[in-house]
Length: 192
Picture 1 (tube, helix red, strand yellow):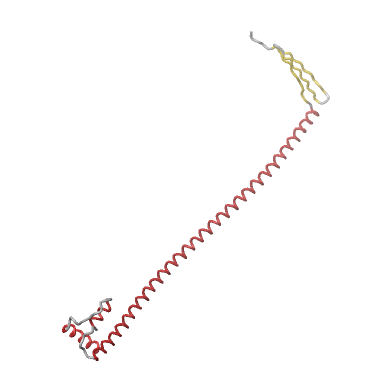
Picture 2: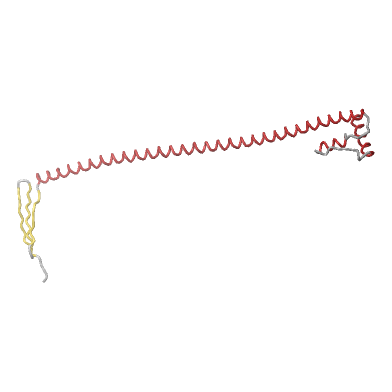
């Protein structure tokens, strides 16, 4: 601590006495300050120069430490930004995969629903075709049964003739072994 005070005091004295001979290093802010505090004054003794060299080495060490701290801080900030971007990207990938999974699941469900619908329509068509065949068979059986029952019980058969002003109607009704014939002649009134 004494050395530093002495060096600072010597630098101030030197700066007051010989301002023209004072040579600071204004390359950076840190080197400018070190140049002012630990500037070289011509005509000083070797002890002062050694002290100033030690102080300059200490200043260089502090500057190197500070620059390293800044670099580590910048690297830490960059690493944090990278980590944030990676977390964001992972979340986006998870959402994108979830969306793709849901889309493929919906597509699969639509395909399954379409297949089930098509199968149900085909089954319905097959059952309807079978029902229509049975219905046709039932109607054929009913027609033959009715024809058979009419012949055993009785039936009506007839024909008619239409002439200019007269209708001739002949009916034959048979009930089992009995038969009856009816013949009518109906005159039609025609207005002239």
